Image (cartoon, rainbow, N blue to C red; front, side, top):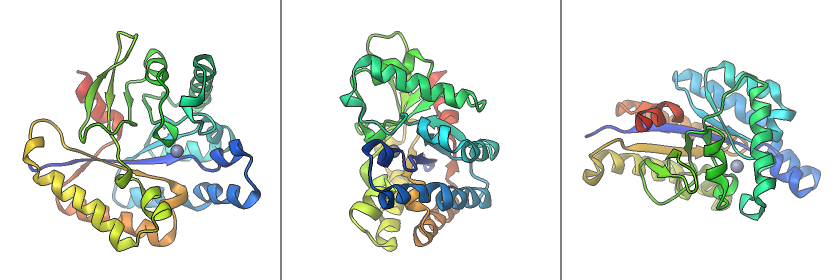
Length: 255
Ligand SMILES: [Zn+2]
């Protein structure tokens, strides 16, 4: 089946991790770029191509920048949860973690946002995370790296299931642009190569081939980088890729 379903996802951490670590002001300001420039540029790009994306947001960001979250919501994009202060969930006790997820959920509810999906900060889950969010009514997670297409995950100690949308570091803008300082051409080539290979991959021909890209507004929002995403979208559109919000795809697995 020569078809690929694309999920463009954006982890909106803003400066939450820097605040939790009590970093100095310049490091904090690097996170704030997400709000000042990153989100507006991403929204403009998605609107240009009439694409709806999925934004995983920290509760602290919802509290501090409700206007930004409302703008994303009003543009019709999906909003999922991403911790409160970008915590390392594996370092938390069960009860501490419950408070974080419930608080973030409540802040989003106050903006009339009903959350269905979760992505772990730093892609680090605790052994309790998926049980907690499944019991809260979440329907999918996007944090594991064990597959390259979605699957049903049986939640431990719960009768509930989640759909898992696996991720990978090479499909993350932060790792390529910030950690490894790859050039725009290199990043485009990696992301395009993965798309092309999925398109051709015979052993994935049963079921959906899902291309999940993870970007951060504070990273991809920079001028030369947003043009890479623009070019990638244009390329994938030329190959008849279909773009989805994650929950819309999750629903097909939950039937
Ligand atoms: Zn994050």
